[in-house]
Image (cartoon, rainbow, N blue to C red; front, side, top):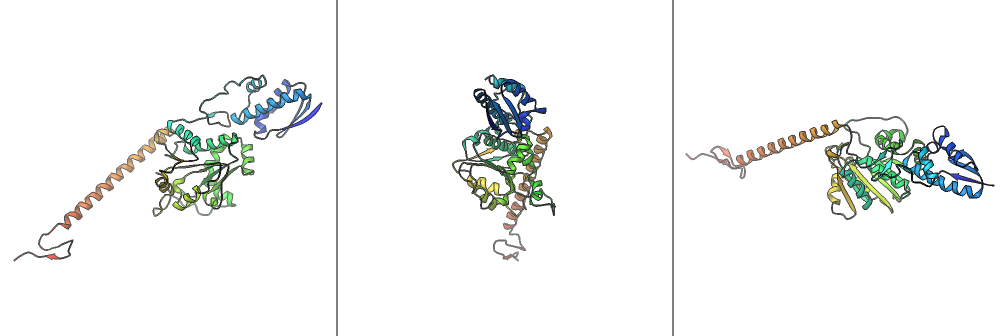
Length: 352
């Protein structure tokens, strides 16, 4: 009889063992010749060496399944232990599974383009309106790469810009001051990674969430790096961010050019970067539209209403500018007696 310790490195033990250790009890029943003791993320096994080898092989398969689907059901355990493919284990097009086991997949043609562009390019710009899924899809792609061990860390960043209001002094330490700006990124991660595992990843700096200002001076290797709300970066900030790219790193830049919160005197770094980098090989640009919006149906109607309003305002401005130009043109050619010539400044008097 020998003893061995099996460490569950990538899975949340609470999910793996099941409610009231139901999964572990089923596994014990399937291996009556082995004595199993589970503590935290370590399973202690005592028994016959041949039986133990089979057990270890199947436990690793169960762990892999649990990491991918964020769930471990009785049916999946029985299928894997019997050497079968778990029912429902094949889902075409799924990026990752949520903590409830729900598949997260592209929900529109442009989201699918985003997924394909991520596979083919190391740098990707995803531009689209609110609710089009650009940030959520980007984070799902990063989580999948981490789970597949293609990278060693995920780095998420946002510029700390207030949306049209001054929040003033925020209490707490540095993390507590910047967390309100980064909450949407936490929300997406919490959908895809069990809370205990997410906290572990953050404690170990495997997943890092930081404001854009903290990126200066870093070289980011073996990572997926996402810059969200990039429309609120300045030209200098986005250039600094893009040049942090290291070896085996992919970058995704997301933004909505219709929701810029910078002062009117500043140019959006995202708009400038898109213009400068449009012909650079290896960089992909995916534009999402209001047809890709996956929030409440009212969001689509709101975006459309604002689009119509902006078009009307633009038309009014152009008409006004056209009228002013015509007026100036008429004045410059007015040579009636008693008026000044615009071009020469000479007053033209009537002949007596």
